[in-house]
Image (tube, rainbow, N blue to C red; front, side):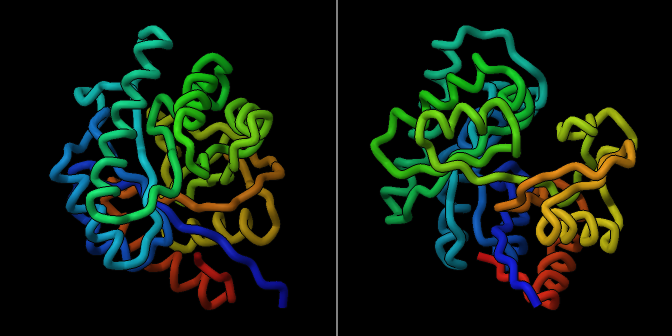
Length: 246
């Protein structure tokens, strides 16, 4: 039997308060650092939990828009966006340094993540944030996205991310949360969705197409009300299939 290896991540520190339940089933996490959610106290608490379970820690910066949870595009200059993303990431790094935990990756949040997948100018801002650190930081990005291709050109280590609980369009963008079929709620359907991406390197879109995709890390949204149930089931079934989670 062919063996596979994959990372499982979740967005955390976003006010849900379920980190202690999520962490045993994660190998990496993305911590909100003040843009859409989070502050020093939440970052500190989540980092301590991640450290306890040996979970890799990354920054989850976003448009500075707490009112809309970072899920709406913002019209701001690229300089202002760079400064905001840099400030957010620095906030987390300061906490990590204080608690003696390594900084592993950056994963943009929400609208910024989705837009950077198709908008070269926004992608460039994120690339410049990563390059501003003299550290071997990895960047979590969608496969075949604009930001992924740009990161590779700049010799930034990319980790191709897929979503366990989200459906895909034919162009590999995520189905909008405004659509009723955006989220996957059923545990068996979610496992089949994930295992196809991990083992076959393909995804079945809502249009019925089978599209190639790379899955280095799987995200389960921590703010999904069923996140714990979905994650536990996914973790268990992947292990039964011999998939190494790390």
